[in-house]
Image (cartoon, rainbow, N blue to C red):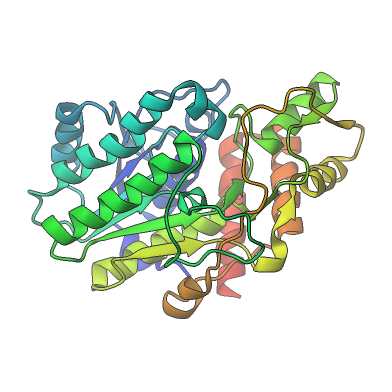
Length: 350
């Protein structure tokens, strides 16, 4: 799937490298031999995958705020990237209700600052802007959204991602000759090393280790669950194709349609994968309203990029819970992550 020869020695700017998905991607890029610069805020959680899995030779880390255009410009100048993978964001729906202005400032204006800083570069070949499957105007229908569907958002996070899609399209057409810049919309991502608040499997692991019940806010909400390595492979393959010319448009990366499952089913399967021993109950406080139905259609990525999901949801859950269990038993996060990256690459070659 991913071409190691393309990435060997490639100058890459990765934003959001201190986050969950970003740390996995930074480690994979280092494994491929890329020369990676990272731009992000300090890690928000303790523990965090960035600190536990990445070393100083893997990435040149720049701690900077996307909301500061001068800081962004300095990092871009230092990195002189050929490829940009933009993952940095305020990624939590519930936090966006508490911090709506900050969410828009980071997700929308932060992306504008980055794209503006990239404009003078002469060696730039590919920019992948990661948004979200929540960028679609959710109509609560049962069939999956395709890239041509209307954008929208009924909460600040979703709306900020829809705005980011529009912004990226405007910069692509106005300043990058209609090429170079693509957007990627991924489903609900799971995997070891995620310790963020208000995410299903990290909440489950915390509940198990604390000996308390897991409380579900919306047990019947259906989402397109996928292991973190699935969309990351898509981002890398998309960047490769952008660098070759073409594909500067929006792309979905999600599981097969039948793999979209309700929250309650995923929680039950994850608890069983750990070995049971946790009670699951409905939370007394449901929180802000969230969409109940969400699926994405990734047939375009399969047909035109050659990407396809390799891990069914049950296997993705098993990989995730095995990672957490082995980490809790004392195995190093770096070794666990590299083992799964190599295993995933082997699956892709099969």
